[in-house]
Amino acid sequence: MNFNPHLRYNKRNMMLRSLPRTIGIIGGGQLGRMMIYRAKKLGFRFAVLDEEGAPAESLADVFIRGSLKDALSLRRLARAADVLTYEIEHINTAALEELQEAGTLVFPSPASLKIIQDKLLQKQLFVKNGIPTAAFFTEESISAGGLAKGKFPLVQKARREGYDGRGVRILRSAADTPLPAASFFEELVDIDRELAVMAARARDGSVAVYPVVEVTFNAEHNICDTVIAPARIDEKTAARARRIALDVVAALDGVGVFGVELFLDKQGRVLVNEVAPRPHNSGHYTMEACLTCQFEQHVRAVAGLPLGDAALLRPAVMRNLLGQPGSAGQPVIEGLYEALGVPGLSLHLYGKAETRPFRKMGHFTVSAATVEEALEKAESLRPILKIKGIPECAGIRAGEIV
Ligand SMILES: Nc1ncnc2c1ncn2[C@@H]1O[C@H](COP(=O)(O)OP(=O)(O)OP(=O)(O)O)[C@@H](O)[C@H]1O
Ligand SMILES: [Mg+2]
Image (tube, rainbow, N blue to C red):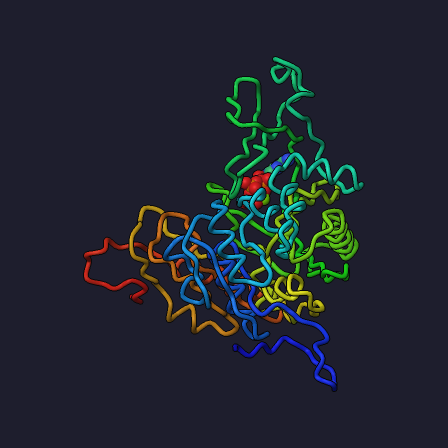
């Protein structure tokens, strides 16, 4: 029999409480991989479901090859684990609901995931709970042909399956072609800066909230480029953003860590854009800069443990390492020695076998005494640290440093 360090006994050797021994993660991308390497320290085992070669495969205790949408594979994962969670929201909620009904613990709940999977349901939840968000119109509320008469500019958003900006289109006039998807329309917010807050909620309803961060995006591809912690905003605005993030998680009755994306507009309004039911790119900085990182926090919450302290230790800047445009193939890391020589810098490479233009291949976080200093260090690496791809037969091995 395997030793389970999470069973607690009283003096008469009666079992008091059992915590999960194996956490099942649906999805083995970089988020799953980081969840494993940061939460292993609590003694858990991890079972992961994803396709072969996924970044978390080499770290998982049990790896189940299969599609995230396949009910049979999800059942196999459930059998291998004591509690299920996920690192991606585009998964089979109907199968998750069935598992939950059959007694499997799933956090965040399939009910909250169903809302998050549909951006319109998210917006309606925000409104119902008095959470500030950009004004929006449903397709039905814009009567047939009404879009032509509508008030432009509008932001069209696909209700489902959007990520990294896919599924978002700015319509400046009736001449612009709308996305061919079930969608809704939002006012175009006059954004001063984009903010994000990671908020955690435990099974008993206790909460922990991380600092507000600023997020900048790659303009061309709408992928997160840089995260600045803490955000350079006044304290009142920061407190409002943190309050709003906690309200969002409570409205969802969420258990786990949630990435709440916000806009600060030019009039000083803080508006919720959307929420992700999992660790988030805007929370990677917590691994080096906070007392408890988002990955450990998520596992604590889904495992039924108390939450950790989310306090910021030092200002930090996180930058994504995206595959260089115009190159694909086996990844070659340029400038690795220079990067690792920067004091305060921590590098994460996701172990993906192949790079493609703008694919998330890794990230670094640089901590410093001030945000300005951290930004300066991050900026100094922009022309140096690059992930390029080479064709397989070029005689250099994957991951080789040049
Ligand atoms: N109403 C709006 N007004 C102005 N800009 C917006 C609005 N909605 C979205 N955007 C811009 O489009 C970006 C992507 O929008 P959103 O986060 O809704 O899409 P997404 O595809 O889910 O993106 P991701 O997966 O990267 O979070 C936002 O970060 C913001 O820059
Ligand atoms: Mg977004």
